[in-house]
Image 1 (tube, one colour):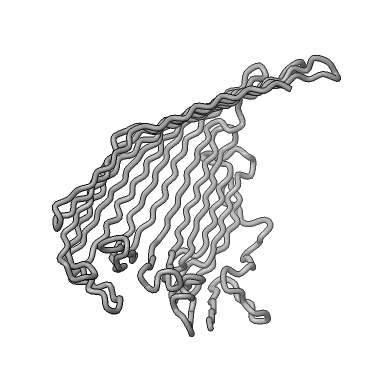
Image 2 (cartoon, one colour):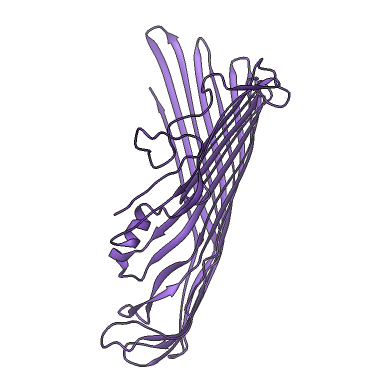
Amino acid sequence: MRRFSTLALLTLRLAAQQPVAPTPETVGNPVRGEDHGGYNVVQSWELGYRFSEVGGNKGEYRSDVNYGNGIRLLGSSLTVNSKNGHGHYFDELILTTQGLGNDPYESAILRVQKNKIYHYDMMWRQNDYFNPGLVVANGYHLFNTTYRWQNHDLTIFPQGKYRVYLGYNRTTQGGPALSSQQFFDSRGDVVPVFSPIKQEFNAYKLGGEVEFHNWHLNVLRRWEFYKQDTPFFINGTTSAGTPGSLTTLTNFNKVQPYHGSTPGWLVNLQTQRRWFAFNGRFTYANGNRNFIQNELALGMDRFGTNQNRQVIVTGDASRPVITGDAALSIFATSKLTIVNNSSISNIRISGNNMFEQIDFATLSAQTLNFQYLAIRLFTNSTD
């Protein structure tokens, strides 16, 4: 059972039931707004307090809804427009927000532009993600993390024949989580371990567009960086909890940092004339990954035998990918069109990767290596 109530400080309507948030009503003059200098301003801000009462399974409620108590900015809207289309710093500014403060789902969107000079878009979002994992993991898996996204895009000379693009994207996930590990063999028991989530993604882009003599060229350069630094560990002795099993962990620590980068190019060239049309696309991405996994486990197996095991996995890989497509159409007559399509794809995975498992109880070790894989494909057709 859930109950919500919203107190709107700017707009109150007692004759009808209020929605949860935000209210669809506006304040002030929604058509004309107010004039300030050379700009017209239309705005609405709604601040409120949210109440919640939960009955039944709280974990299910948090995974589906997750609204809690507290004050927050339920919703806001701000629009500023130049009255003559020639503002000093900008001609249009639009800002909208929802749930800022205490809501599990928050967002803010901003747009600022000046005619023929620049166009800027920003989007920011935050979601509180809770997953009790009760059905599939018997309580051994749990997530209580926060996702954050932000996107920034700037276009210089947006209405001109020469345009410049700049952009930045960022995504993060962080928070406490519970995972599980199997010890000490393939028939071993499952033990819960703590794993604070740490993931981050950053992307930068720089490019431009050019139009000349009915030819359109678009070039974009991207740099992407990804890293995951989630550790796994336990504090103190932990048992598997299986009846009759002696499996216990007295010490467990696992780190597996995984970092990578993917610089790339995107190029598009196209034109359409009276007698022919051409469209060509080219992409290149050079993915690079570096990782290491170091796992140490001390304890007893299901038969009560002391165990001391270490697993080491290392690797650095390069994965360049090239793709290209070209389509040429020739309009020979009103009844005859010749179309030629050519495509090429080339991918390689190369590097030094090694898996090594050391069993100190039996003084044995296993090692696996992987080094190279490549695929190249070329196709051509004429219709």
